[in-house]
Image (cartoon, rainbow, N blue to C red; front, side):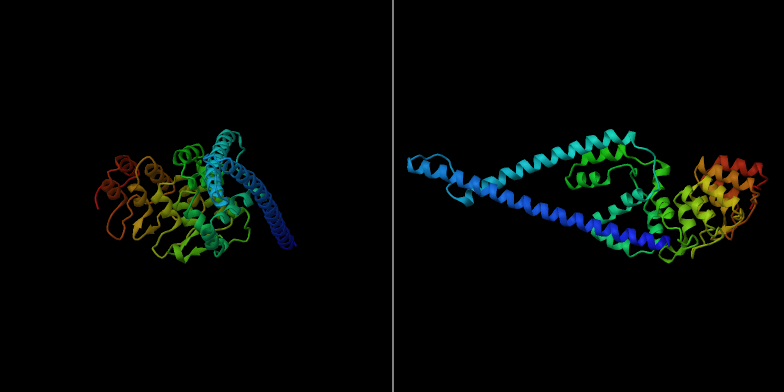
Length: 338
C-alpha cells in the first residue's frame, strides 16, 4: 500500500514538473516575442533618425543599416547582461552567507531528500551514471564521495559561481559552508533513511568486495556504520583483500567505529593480510592510534599476537616510531622480543 502511494506521488510530482516546464517555455516564448517587437520599434526609430540626418546632409555617427544597428545593440546588451548576471550572483552570495548561520540542523524528510538528490540532474553525465546504480551501489558511491560542503549550502549557487569563473567567491562560500563531521555523513544517512529495503550486508564487487560497513568504517563515517549495524550488517565480512570493518576502522584510527564493532562482537584478535588489528592500530599516528590500541586491549586483544610475517604489535609500534603505543602495549604485557 505504501509503495503504491509513493509511486502515485512520484507520478504526480513528475507531472507537476512537466507542467511547470511547459509554463516556463510558454512564458519564455511570450517574452521573446515582446522583445522582438520592442527591438523592431527601436530599430525603426533609429533608422528614421539616420534618414533625417542624411537628408539634412549631416555626417553624424549614426547607424546606416538594421544589421549595423543590431550589432551595436547586441554588444551593448551583452555587456549589460554580464553586469546584471554578476550583480545577481553577488546578491545571491551575500544572501547565502547571511543565511548559513541561521539555518537549522539537517533533516531527513522527503523535502530534504528531494533537495539533496534532485540536484544530481544539474550534471547530465553524472545523473545518467548515478541513475544506473542500485540502491546499494549508490550508497557505496556516497560513502566513497562524501560531500565537501555543508548540506545547508546553496550548491546551485556554488556551481554558478564556478561556471562564472568567480574563484575568490567560490573559496569564500566553500569556507563558510565547510561541513561538520555529521554533515559529511548526511547524504549517506539520508539515502539510507529513504531506502528501508536496502541490503545492509551488501558487498560491492567494484570495490574489491568491501562491504558497506567496511566502507563506512574506512571513511570514518561512524553514524552510517551505526545505522548499518542496526540493520544487522555482517560485522565479520572480509573483502577479497582480507579487509574487514574492524581492520578498516583500525587503519583509519577511528576509535568510535572500532568500539561499535567490538560491542557488536567483532573479534579483537582478527587479522588482515596476516597482520593483527592490534598491530594495524599500533602503526597509526597518535592520538588516534593510541586510543584504538587501548580500546582493543580493553576488549582483551592479545598483546603478543604474531602475524604471518612474524611481527608483533609491539614491533609494529616500534617500526612506526609510536612510543606511546609501545608503552601501552608493555603495560598490557607485550614482549619486546619476537
